[in-house]
Image (cartoon, rainbow, N blue to C red):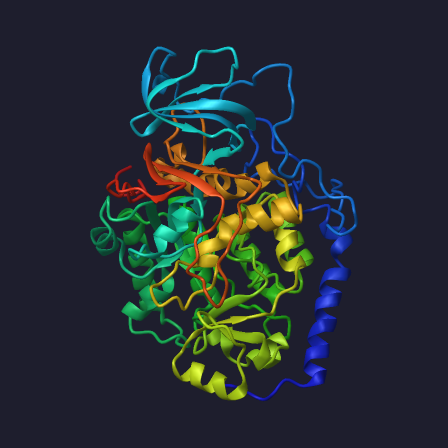
Amino acid sequence: MSGPRPTVGSIGRRRLLLALGFGATNVAVLRRLGPGTGSSTGPDSGSLSDATAPGDPVTAPESPDAGSAPAAAVAGPVPSDGPPEVPVVDESAARGPDHVFDLAIVGGRVIDPASGFDYVASIGISGSTVAAISSDPQAPPLQAATTIDATGLVVSPGFIDVLSYSPNGYGEWFKMADGVTTNLGMHGLDNRAEDWFTAHPDGSSPIHFGGASDHAFVRQVHGLEPYDTAAGSTLEAMLTDARADLRNGFIGLHMQPEYTPGTSADALLAHAAVAAEHGVPLCVHARYSDNLPPGTNLQAISELVSAARETGAHVHVEHINSTGGTGVMAEALGRIGDAIGEGLSMTACVYPYTFWATYLKSARYQDWQEKYGIGYGDLQVAGRSERLTEQTFADAYAANRLTAAFAMSPEDVDLPLQAGFVMVGSDAILEQSHNNHPRSTGCFSRVLGHYVRERQVLDLATALAKMTIQPARLLEGRCPALRRKGRLGIGADADITVFDPATVTDRSTIADPAQESAGIQWVVVEGRVARSPDGFTAVQPAGRGLRSDIGTA
């Protein structure tokens, strides 16, 4: 399993492929990435359909070291002649200035990526709903039982982690410390929907939860090993199970053909057809993650584009920086951008790290030295501080440790963060063993701290759209609860994150992923303060299961 030591030739060949993949297509892709670092304004800001049409010019962002970075990465709201129009989701929820609110958040920079509202304002909350937004400095102050002074802070919709896993009673607390108020296991939930929701009742988690039917799990239920291909009758039985899971509350379908190599192209198309039939996305960990034929990143992306074209399904490409785009990111994004320009429905997500991690006995680590052009010193077991050697690799492999691989370049993260159709997803939740990637605890704060404030790869409003309204719009078609999340308007659910843009940052590392992010000051879930600057509050967990309406429509 460990394979031969990498040769100078294999590493050099991979580097050449990476250079060709980026350099030869960079100019072409810059016109296809969609909105980049400009401010998100207007009523359709953050929409999944905002990708620039093929042929439209998009200026390449300069290097953050070049002395000319995008303007207003974390600056205050753009000055205007007067208060902007207050966003409204449901006008019947509005309460007047004489109302005494349960909670008020006053004096913060309120950013609603769904509408483009970006102004210093105060928010009044009644029950679990945003009931007032006051942006007039001459208006009397809101009266409330509890008031949070957000002066100098940003007030945003609570972050939606679109690519996570089941709540486990531990990791979701760290997600809340990272600003997350909704944890969606679109990377697949390892149970049938009816049983999963029974095991995760409302109030069992501090943040909201839901997710996708996991094809890999269903394969196991039907007795298939990773390299087995399902016979026709077995495939039909799995499709029946997928439909049942959607009726029983799951909000999408998930497949991971890289980890289940026996998954045929026909099986992927069949599941895409079921997703299209029910109006949910097919979320896919693509088939390949390297650039050595046979089986390359771009072939994996082409398979997903074809699935969207042939079935009409919305296909979501999971963690494109580590699978599907690594080393050829410009061309991978260009192919998806062209597909969107063609009228196909596609999105992707990214996590803000240049190293991935998974279990050493998984199919992804098969022939890893040749595929990725890396050696033992490029590997580190999560939860430990040292890089591996040939001997320690053997020990880690025997224990099947989750191990990080330094196999990505900065462009593999920068470019997708600048693409309009790409959102942010962690691809992890912390386990008590702490054998986890730091993306499990620091994903969202790292985007805001490292990529927005420090490097200015994208601006604040654009980053927040990728964490809030974009994942909400991806899934709200068959999940009514999400139509009031990811937004900060009157009538929206009061799931709110308040953070300091000057200090927000991730603190977790591979050696110690169990570190809370810094700068997340307040987190409100269902209208109740769940986290304050002093830490977690003692209120009853308010997380609710987010279900599809397919079985009740």
